[in-house]
Amino acid sequence: MVLVDLKEDNKWINSRWIVTYRIGWEQMLKICAFASNDYDMLEILVDKKQVSERGEDIFKLAEAGSLTFRGLSSIIGTPIMITLYNQTDFADVSVAMATEEFSKADYESFNKSLAQYLTSIEMAMLR
Image 1 (cartoon, rainbow, N blue to C red):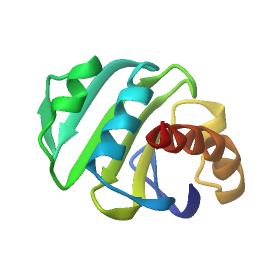
Image 2: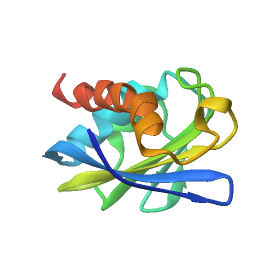
Image 3: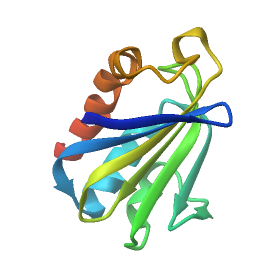
Image 4: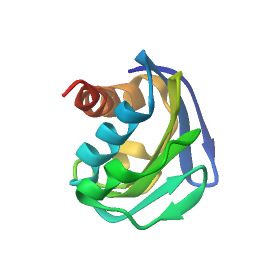
């Protein structure tokens, strides 16, 4: 993924990323299922409505316009929320400004901190 925009908003860094390829619902579910293993207090939302599916049940979610997963990431060490949009080539990512690494919305450092992580979860859709 490629970072195209970021801004600070109420102790969160909100960013927009371009996905390498347009993603459909099946790819969104693969990304969510892959990433969900690394989150504490995971919440999944479909079109902004929380759902209770976890694990393999994620693949039973009915197709919708957006899929959000959020929680405390054990990989980056802070709360994060990722929203994917069906049949688009962008994603929105919000990261809590709760660690030194994410203490300000600086394009270069934020990109270095998140690009590899987001690319790895994006690659999950190809599995």
